[in-house]
Amino acid sequence: MTRDSAINSVTQYFDNGTFKTELAALVAHPTESQNPDAAPELMRYLTEAIQPRLEKMGFTTEILDNPDPRGGPLLIGERHEADDLPTILTYGHGDVIRAQDGMWREGLTPFDLVEEGDRLYGRGTADNKVQHLINIAALEAVLATRGALGFNTRIVLEMSEEVGSSGLADVFHSHKDRLVADVLIASDGPRLQPEVPTVFMGSRGGITFDLDLKLREGAHHSGNWGGLLADPAMILAHALSTITDRRGQIKIAEWRPDSLTDDVRAALDGLPVTGGEGPKVDEDWGEQSLTPAERVYGWNSFAVLAMTSGVPEAPVNAISASARATCQLRYVVGTDPEDIIPALRRHLDAHGFEAITIRPHDRGFFAATRLDPKHPWVGFITASIERTAGQPPHVLPNLAGSLPNDSFTDILGLPTVWVPHSYRGCSQHAPNEHVLKSLSLDALRVMAGLFWDLGEGGTPSS
Image 1 (cartoon, rainbow, N blue to C red):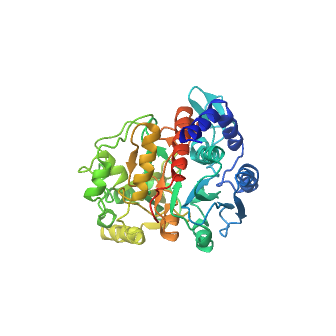
Image 2: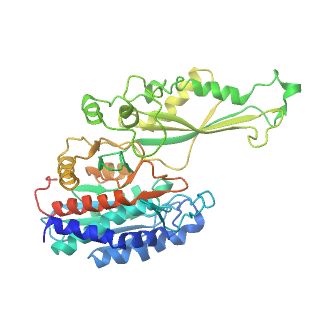
Image 3: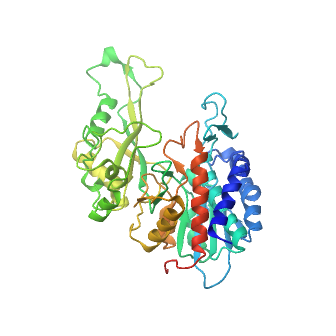
């Protein structure tokens, strides 16, 4: 009954092929939450893949209908060992984005796990099925080794994260008493580098909106009307050019955060933004006075996700009637989310673009959150990880992407520490999504060590 025994147990679980078999079974569920026809699969994932496994571990579970019609069901589970023990809340999501079937390279299909070298391909391998599988398997290993966890555990597994965690906040408000805990320890997102564990304590927020400009009904011949009719695409392009300069530096004052403190800069100092796979970083893009790590983890970024005017796939000699740009602001703590759209409206109006309409997307994005890297729970978890991995993890104040972390911080009032089990080159949200076997084994060992240490006592007081 030792820490090493629990770690050896998950190592054997990986080496004997059980991990791969179980991941394949999870991937086989086509849980596309963005596809209304997949609704039965969302429930089936919980009832067939998750609920029986948790109940075998001694959890009491309940599957809840989502109060938001856009969202899928949620599972809440609890394993209670003693009133005087700390309570750990963990989380995962079993839904995936659209499969993009037919876009994967030859030999790959979204819902069949395919092994090639160090990679396991399939939709949901990285986001998020492998991540909660690793954590559940690590809990099982500690339970089997010690005979008890040594702490109380609560779990939330939702099926709507890929549609903005619709209904999650409502469920948390309604069931707040069932989710009381000392800390959230969960897994989503990527490591900074595949071979080094990462810890992050929050995420950037995000808001997506369309900029629309409609000048008239119908297009008109560019020869007969060129020089007489205003071009909506050109006007919209000029409007966009007022939001940032040519290197993407934000020019709207209210979109420039005030939270890049010396402590945050110190936490980000030296953290890599390259490694593994992915495109080469453009050093001359973004806020010029910041380091690359500060730009992506400590600052806001504006992006044009798509633009249309006319019919791009079949252009004709005509001046378009309208133009549209779909845009997104990723923002950190220190940005007022309620003023993002109003500030943009004031900015466009001040530059003479009153005719452009701003249409926020219905799909909600998550708010920005951040926990102090010096928080005692961060210290406890990073020390455990270093003990297992033999090296300190990378510690991020917040992830560059977005997660429903605000539901845990703002509604449940929890410190939140995320330990991701993927890497940035995993093709998340794209064809050919995959997870690395080597990283998965390392993550299993790290989490088994962490869960063992949580049951040894000496955890931070709530």
